[in-house]
Length: 273
Image 1 (tube, one colour):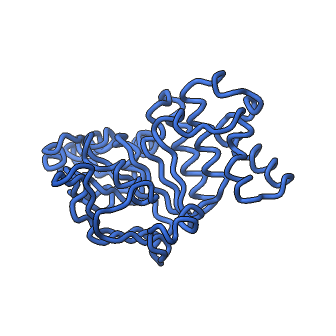
Image 2 (image 1 turned 45 degrees about the vertical axis):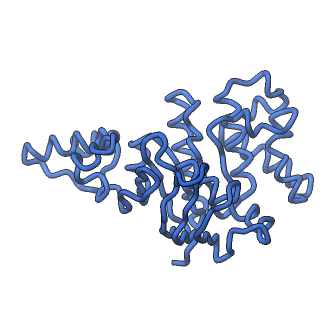
Image 3 (image 1 turned 90 degrees about the vertical axis):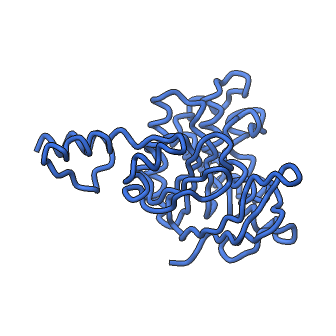
């Protein structure tokens, strides 16, 4: 597989001599679904902004699909990567839901009829098709976030980052977006997806987990490997997924649970067989 993201010896500071990102290096393969987790202040959101060139690194290099992230290549970078932020009020641009989803498509000069089809398609995917004519002040925070997600997905970027994008949604909305992520990945297997999240259950469902701690990579690997040592994870203020706790408890009763089982529904189905 070819690399979608390459990060080499990346360093960044908001203040002199106070490093927020400390000599980080990692790569992400095309089509991977990677979750970035860590406590508040660990550097997750800072890293996402560096990847999108919303911040400029003090040192080190970032490559997206082999293209170096720098001022000279900023236009190319914008076509490769898209991001959904935590606060939807910071990214709602259009006067209506329809206009907001269409904003990026208009900038890319997508033909009008195709644009209308894409706007409706992605509004339906996030459950906002009934609100296309609504203005932003008529929407809740969660509804605005759904619109922002629709706008990013409609652009068909090769790399998409969700930076705590589900934090303003209710539990049902969070599950809806998780399902949308899985469906989008099935439809677009080459899409590289980075989710910055506090949701340990989501992290366990991803292809790979990177844990940041104090601006450094603490752990990096498949979820079942990363969450294997619960004591080590809890040292930095994190917990292991609930379904893994249940699986571990059942294993102590001599019942072997397959590693492939990663959520409660799958576990229930297995136990009922």
